[in-house]
Length: 202
Image (tube, rainbow, N blue to C red; front, side, top):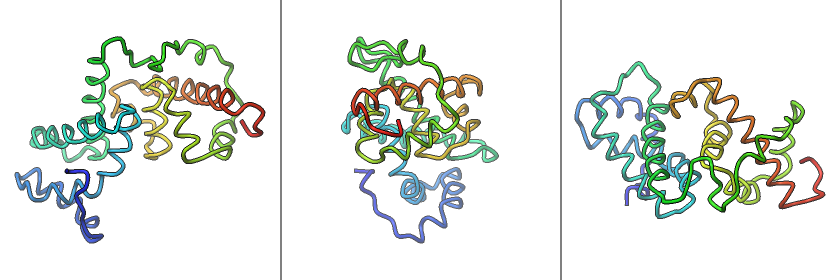
């Protein structure tokens, strides 16, 4: 299984050179690149797919697609953003293929409109949310959001991507990223308050 590939720490420092080697057609260098991004990429796909088996399949497909397209990769671009955009496109195809599911749907019959009608919180809303709970609790709440909202939250706060990089990954305008992020945070607040009523800091 590709996901289980193990590399030593020295491989990390050679990842940039490995990317160049992969572009030159050296498949052996791919293991170094995978070692650098495997955990983050799988986490991102798991956030979108919500199913470990599907995430693993998408993970495998992503690296196969990378090998297919690496010859057309522009070295002037941010490789990380390009890699995640490849994964994004495959994940979106996965969601579109799921009968009855929408990228804007939570998957349980609820519509996202309720989140969009919320009044935006104060500027410290994100800090309060992140300080309120982390780990499994926050992940469980994130799981209930629509795929497009899970994606933007994951890329921004787990992958620490800039808004411009998120726009590149998702193939959407920067203004859409900002709007989607705001709605995603509002939706996350609603889920937290519904799951844990009366908790302070939400």
